[in-house]
Each structure stands twice: as structure tokens, then as C-alpha cells.
Amino acid sequence: MNDIPIEKMDGLIYDARDAIMRMTVMGGEVSIMMCRTTSMAQKAQDTHLASDAATAAFGRVLSGTAMLSTVLKEDNSSVTVTFQGGGPAGKIICVGNKNTLKITATNPQAEVEPLSSGAQDVSGYIGSDGTLSVVKDFGKGDPYIGISRLKSGEVAEDFAQYYMDSEQVNSIVALGCLNANGVVLSSGGIIIQAMPGISDKTLDMLEMRIPFYSNISREIYDRSMEELCSAWFRGMDLQILSHEELYFNCDCSRDKMLGALLASGKEELNDIIQKGEDVEMQCWFCRARRKFTVGEIQELLIK
Ligand SMILES: [Zn+2]
Image (cartoon, rainbow, N blue to C red):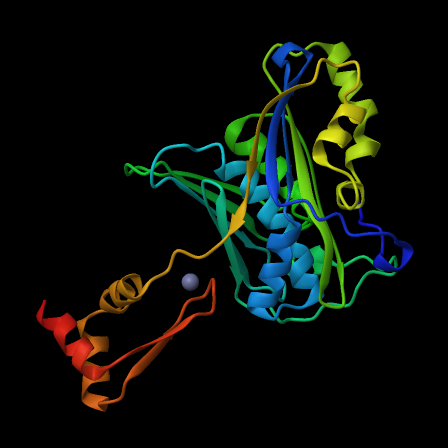
């Protein structure tokens, strides 16, 4: 399931917007989601001045998270996906708030040599000994938390394992990001899920088609998702249920940062006041820096 190395590609970059599509085939026996996250992966690389290996991981994690978060329609709902695999990445955290996503890593600039095939070494960056955790917050307390062991650190297999362990859904997951030298050519993914009562015939038809989806980043490089799905699922009664745009954006603000500062505790705040120096805080997701004066911090303590 490796991506094709960038040197072997030519042609135009397909400039469709990032989006997610939901579909069914065979009268609802199978549920399918597919997404394009090319612009988001590029923005993630630019925001964090990320290495190519980190960007390849970001592209895959953004795609997997988009397919989890856009399903939640409640106000204030969100999905937080955390990969912690013991590799140079440290933690990768991706938050999806309906159709808007943000992502960060402890070490986005850590370099990892590409594989001998030329593809980025995503599991070398993430590591494969650790966990994938998914927190679904429905916006009214009592979040759902699912944790599964990483299968390989390649991301797609780890999401498939998560769906099996935590949601008991048998899934085919393919995620890919085609990038090198600071440029993302394409990024996206597909999740194919068998609904209860699926027939053996349908399962066979899906498995026969695995070679189509397994090179997802190459496939969406120059073709629309509709075109691809129409070809891949020909003769399987493809129904497109929705097509929505995806956005890369951070929802941080001065007020939220002040809240985080307050949460660090009175002792910490008193220390800052005694030092008498302004404090600069940086958002881990969008890298925005905000300055707070000693006066503002004093006010915070009084409140
Ligand atoms: Zn931010």
C-alpha cells in the first residue's frame, strides 16, 4: 500500500477543493467515505515547517480524522485523534470539528529518510509501538473514548484496527499522501465498511477491487472522486449521499489562551507575576503567538 514515488509522476496537479463524499453500494450493504485532503496537507506542512515524512503522516491522519469527524453533526461536536507510536514524531494530534480540521505533532520537523522505493517512511516517523486514541465529543459531555494498539504506524492499518476493536466494524481503509521537497501533490483516503448482513458475493466484489483503492494518493492526483468511484464501483449500484467541502483552520483565540494560562494554576501565575515579564504563548496547531502582560495575568488571578 505504498505511495508511488514523486519522480515517477508527471502531468498536472488536479486542483479540486478538499472535500469528503459519502456513498453506499449494493443497496446499502456497504458504506463508503472518500476524501481529498491535498490542500490541508500542504497547509499543515507550511504551518509547521514540517519535514516531508511528517507531512506524509499529516496527510494520512487528516484524511482518517476527516472521515471520523464529519459524521458528527451535533453543535460543538469534535473528534480528537492521537497517534503515539514511539517514533521521532512524538505525539500527532488531529482535531476535527465537523468539516474543519487542525493538526500538530510534538516534532513536526523531525526528518526521516524516505524508503528505498522513494516513498515517505510514515511508520518510521510515527513509530509502530504505541496507541491510536480516538475521543468523540458529542458536544454534551460524556465523550466516547476508544483506544487501540497501533498495527504498523502506517496509519491506514491502524485506523482499520481501531474500527474493528472499538466500533466492531470490518473496514477496508486506504490513506495516502504523495509529497516530496516541501510540495504535496495529492492526499486523500477511502474507508469501505461492511454493514451487518452483507452477502459473501458483495464482500468478494469489494476485495477484488482492493488494488484500485490501495494507491489512493496516486489515483486522486488527477481525477475527481466521483469519476474514480463511478469506475471502481461500476455495476454495484453506487449511490452518492453527500459531497461536502473540508477546511483547514484553527479555532484558537486570545480568550482560549488566557483560559489555558489560568488552568496552569495559581502558583505558576504568581511566579510569572513575580518575574515581572510578559508571557508569550504559542498555539500548537496554527503556531500563532500571543503576548500577555503581567497586568493581564494579575487581572486573571483576581477574577
Ligand atoms: Zn491556533
